Image (cartoon, rainbow, N blue to C red):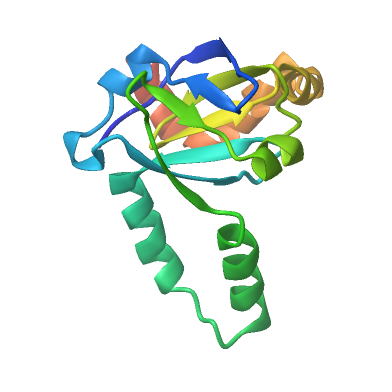
Length: 157
């Protein structure tokens, strides 16, 4: 399983193509074959899943009950803007204009490794989200999500 991490800023050309960061490319599982699924994130960013990770997401989605309103709504709104993409020979990824517009990406894209997926942000939207999160609130959130036992292990205790 890849573990994408780090932050990388790249220019987006007039055709919506952006260089895929070399360090993230090195973390790709060979099974992904430089194929991805790109879709709207749950924040004002795009989610980029390598093919092998996207297959796991699809398995989870197939377990959602489509006979409930909640299930249909989640599936519809998560999948309706999904696009399958591949890197070109120059290791660029094409960002569809409708997804770039939704995420307010114009001229510059910031790639953030987020474990099994990559987030792509506009610098302005990322700054906006970051400015609403104080260090103290991040500490509290981290402790809630990771739990006391996991924090002790992370600190070597």
